Image (cartoon, rainbow, N blue to C red; front, side):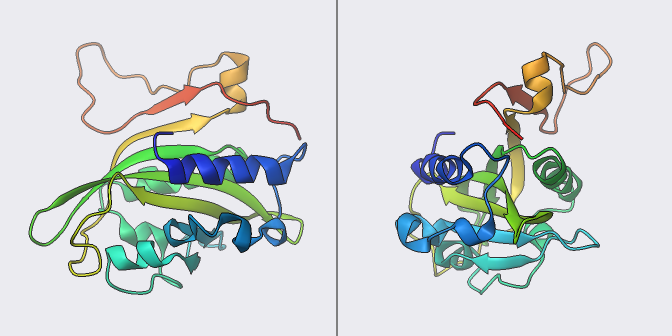
Length: 197
């Protein structure tokens, strides 16, 4: 994680979860993270896995000049990246593993913006596979924010933080024939904190 928003949200999430695998949505006190609320969101895990946004921070909304609550998180992405983002959300939900990703977007006047995405699993009234807490923070505060709409998000890189496979030493890299370049992002697993269930 490079952005302070991601670091702060991750630290708060870890503090809330304690020895559990993940905290409950009801554990979150917005006052404790008020300084990063504008960059945060909560995704609902619905039966069809369209992943509607239940809550969306003001800076996230300002990127597209509209309230994102109720819209599909996948619709924020370009068509080429939706399957990868859906797979990342499944990793967060099914693997109870945080994911961090590098993201780009461009405005209608072709201004480019780098962002960092953090996805964290949440329970909802004790139920697993129900919510994802996230943050989408820009590398810098663009002067066009609130005046121009960002385009679709583009996935640049992605890594799982403390996947069980990483602790076991297993590799999650996809296999490509030798000599074939990888134009699309690939998954890199880094060992992090100990996950307790």
